[in-house]
Image (cartoon, rainbow, N blue to C red; front, top):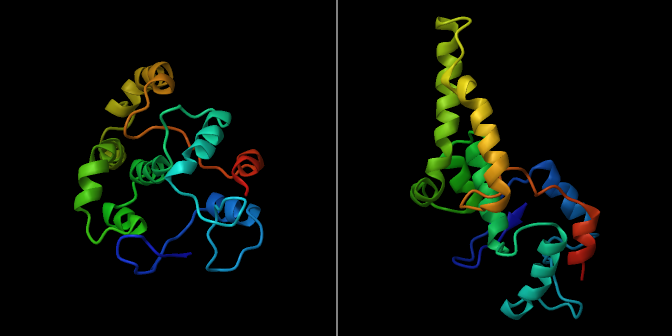
Length: 173
């Protein structure tokens, strides 16, 4: 998909996961240059229309503090957590280099590095649980206990970006 960012006006290609493509198909037929979210009168959303997004996030069960830009942040966080190289994440976000991505999301790649190292060294020590395996129950318990109530820079830990008809009904113009 080609998008035109507000800051420099240069169109760039952004690859969407299947959920993103499904979501756009659910939005109905639009011309290639059409905006996805418009008001009922056909104009684009402005700052004064944040209440519409707030209603949608509350109905979707997201934290009240969640903002539209949080969707972009969640997407980038999940890419980094999935082990995507920072240069690819930067390209998806429209950054010219990895500096901003590294500063903002670099801490999230630590678990990916840990998992990759454990995977590479596992054949050297068959039958010995890795550090990741040993602390997995503790990590899961802490995330389950604290993640829902403590949205941080990488919130949400699970994927809330799946295209769903209910969310579309809320955001439809």
